[in-house]
Amino acid sequence: MKRTLSESFHQIREPQERPGIETPGEQQPAGEQQPTLEERTDSLEKVGQLDLPKQESDIFILTIIGQIEGHLVLPPQNKTTKYEHVIPQLVAVEQNPQIKGVLLILNTVGGDVEAGLAIAEMINTLSKPTVSLVLGGGHSIGVPISISCDYSIISPTATMTIHPIRLTGQVIGIFQFFEYLDKMQDRVIEFVSRHSHIPREKFKELMFNTSQLGRDIGTVLIGQEAVDIGLIDSIGGLSDAVTKLRSLIKEKETVGVH
Image (cartoon, rainbow, N blue to C red; front, side, top):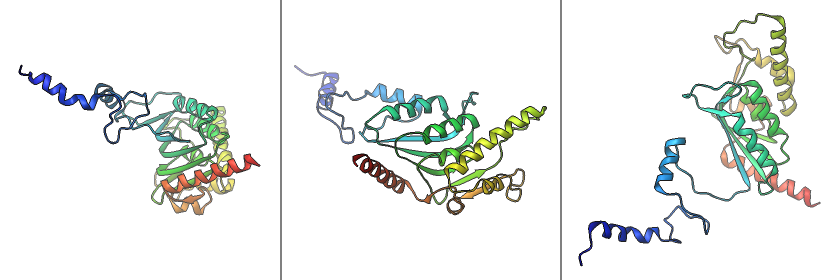
């Protein structure tokens, strides 16, 4: 009896769909089902990327990208890091014994001050070793987040903008509101001076610099400048960040043994 075209097609595809047979680059743990084409397409439509192959690791990767979203929802065209997504991840990391360290990767323009400080404080109070890597930019409230780790690294081409808290054109109508903003700014300055090697007065000087930005006040630091001034620990890239984190993890484990 002649086979139909449909039957032949299914027989050709059958070996690839048998349990235990994997295609190159898509190895899965025993007993775990591979995502279907429909599931992969659905993931691509929702988040703009395909699911990456899973790989067990004792290092947790946390990315801070785009604009840090706080209490107000930003427009849909903005790339954002939502603090209500980051905070539960950090709590889970602290409670997971399988995770030995955290690699923080930043490319952010800044954003909500209170949300940024909340993320920075949580990272700083993790009991596990942490290393940050600034790529592209770590501007505004991204500065405290980048130095909240045990060790900070910046790529040679990355930039960091230091400036006072902005009001986006809003007029200060009462003295109490100005006082509140001043205290919030002091919180940022205090955090940075406490967790980096830059003196408090030097950071304030960079913050209120009027010679660099034509229409604003502040300072832009590029790569090595951020290191020379004591804000960031060293220049480097991804391999340097991973190597340093492995070193801190090993050091912590050695201290724990003794």
